[in-house]
Length: 147
Ligand SMILES: CC(C)(COP(=O)(O)OP(=O)(O)OC[C@H]1O[C@@H](n2cnc3c(N)ncnc32)[C@H](O)[C@@H]1OP(=O)(O)O)[C@@H](O)C(=O)NCCC(=O)NCCS
Image (cartoon, rainbow, N blue to C red; front, side, top):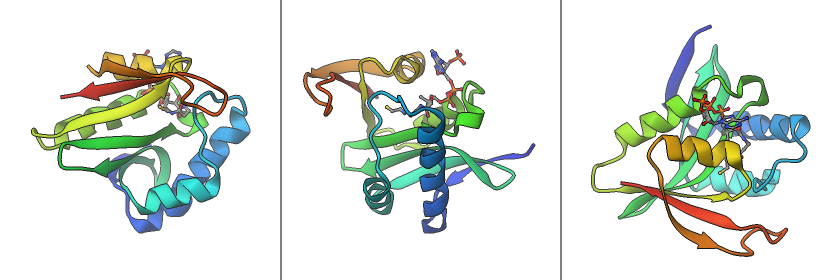
C-alpha cells in the first residue's frame, strides 16, 4: 500500500462523492452527517480540501472554508473500508501543521457523533460552544476550535 496526502483538486470531485456514497451504503444510520450529493458537490466547489489516497483511491478527506480568522472545517469523512486505521487522525494532524499560525480551526459536530468528537478532542480541539436543535432531527451541535 502506498499512501499519499495531498490537497484536493477539482478532479477529485467524483472521488469525494464516492467516499460519501459508500459511507451511506455501509452506515445508513450515521448521526449528524447529512450530505446529499448536490449539497456535497456545492460544498466541494466552494471549499479547499486535503485527502489521503491509497494507490490513487481517496480514503479520507477534509473540506474547509478559508476566512481571515479561521479555517472552517465543513466536512470530514473516511471511507468505510478504512475506519479506525488512523488516516483521519493523520490528515487532521497535517491540517493543524499546515494552517497559518494566525488562523484557528473551527468545526461543529453532533453531540452523539462520539467517533468524531473523540478524535477532535484527542487532537487538542476545545469545545467552545453549543447549538441546541441544530440538526434536522433536533440534535445538538458542539462547536470546537483549535488555535
Ligand atoms: C469520524 C471519522 C471521520 C473518523 O475517521 P477514521 O479514519 O476512522 O479515524 P481514525 O482511524 O483516524 O481514528 C482516530 C480516532 O477517532 C476516534 N474513533 C474512531 N473510530 C471510533 C469508534 N468506533 N469509537 C470511538 N472512537 C473512535 C478515536 O479517538 C480514534 O483514535 P484511536 O485510533 O487512537 O482510538 C469516520 O468515522 C467517518 O467518516 N464517520 C462518518 C462521517 C462523520 O461523522 N464525519 C465527522 C462529522 S463532524
